[in-house]
Image (tube, rainbow, N blue to C red; front, side, top):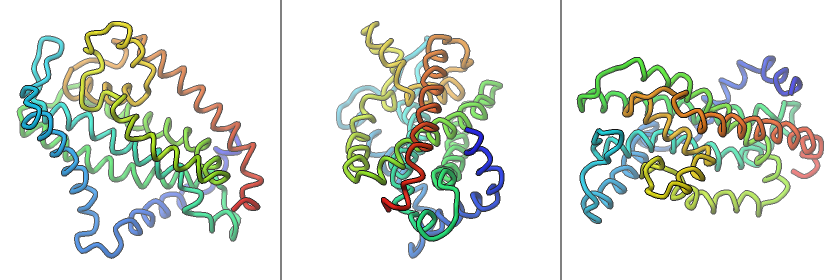
Length: 269
């Protein structure tokens, strides 16, 4: 753990510059450049809104805690963390393979590769979150003190999924099948997470409890608590306790797997 932290402390500037460069590479050659960071999520959100509201005629709003929220607004607040999560998981797993020159050709701390990959996605996430907030304000959702929870959920989300890539990225370098498996299961994970529905209100009590073990739910619900439900993160102590326990496990496994595999990565790559 201290080795990883030491690597980050001495390479802070390089991590930031590499994250910016990673974004530039992503949109290099595109006529509208970084606008694709908005267009792709916006189109995805429109498709799901159209499918559920117009196509399936499932109603215009989501009711919870005595209030009704427009379906578009409900989906918007859930999709903003999801876009960061899915990119962090899939691109994080590929990060070492995509930046193998830092492992095989130069002396560079491998753990920072996963960090600058996630940091590049975080820049996009903050931009999308600002757009989301502007849309909420335009739809009559006034600023509240609960909105400040964004500054808790956002760094926590970043830390959790970086810790996860300490395991997935080295393992993906050893096995292309592992990387392909992660990409393949993400579409299933989407439907098993409360991105397009309220995981608090499934109508099956035991299933609602099971859904608390999905960390993606924690962040989707957290953003909705902050911007829609007007609830504090500690008002559901069971959900919070489960997530913190999972965070400790993911963090410990990440350190274990990273230290176990990093010395053999140059030979494998």
